[in-house]
Image 1 (cartoon, rainbow, N blue to C red):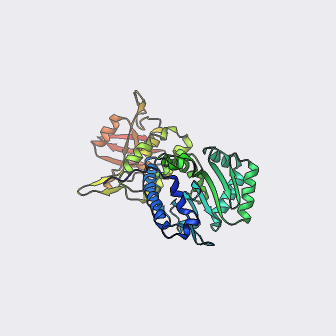
Image 2 (cartoon, rainbow, N blue to C red):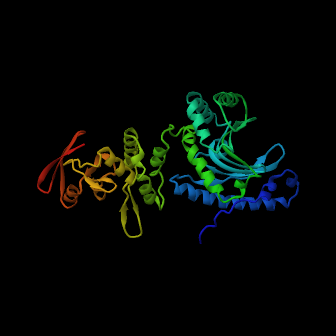
Image 3 (cartoon, one colour):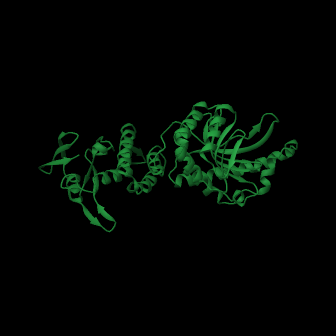
Length: 369
């Protein structure tokens, strides 16, 4: 049975968290309705993020309780693989009595994360502001504890945030805030809005959690493609492979090295019911073709087609024979030499950083690395 599509909240859903209603036991039923809607939102948001190539697994938190008054004040979908997720950095979509927030939240108790936030903002003022300015100017919000800006933010404002990070207690927020009076809160378009916010802020989330430096958003997405093993991983990798052509030469080399490290250590096949299937990473293949400019490493030939030029990639030692899906085991070949390798037994005579010498089809071939 297909999962229900998210059709949006209603404005009266937010009244489930009003303090006056907390005294009425029947208000629990209203909060349960909002909880169920959040579960549907999470499911739809998960699918949208997967479609965009983001392997983020969401979870709906427990109610957020104001411990001074023992009142339920909201709940949220948290995206993080660090536990316990409610006291660290997370990508968050939360619904509260005043509206909806989507973006990065970091608890003050997660000092390491806050230190990274402070260091990055101090050393990258312009870049920090650029991420903020990529958010919708009508709704973007940055703040910490009692400090909140809604609208334009300057470098001086960031300095105030840094000062608050050192002295105040609470949450650091960076994202978009939608008051409950806005149509966006009650529309199905909330899913795509939140997914876009996460896409804009994901590089910062990586920095703030200490997992990766901020770099090209495209390369961040490509490097994540092989980190999960799901039914549709091959389809997503094929979609992402088309983006390799937009990277610089330095980024292409970086992505080849990263995939090499990952593929050296993981199983490159998966079992189906009857057969063993070997998974090849098309992102790595596309990157290698760009490295060699679609020219055969043996004869230096290429083939012109309507969309540019064309060459194949070939595993020197087949995956079924224990070869790895890494750049040192992959050749960029013209279709002619590719067929020769496919239909002939290949013997590696010598292998160095600059050259590989093989014997195949009764001839010795020099392959330029």
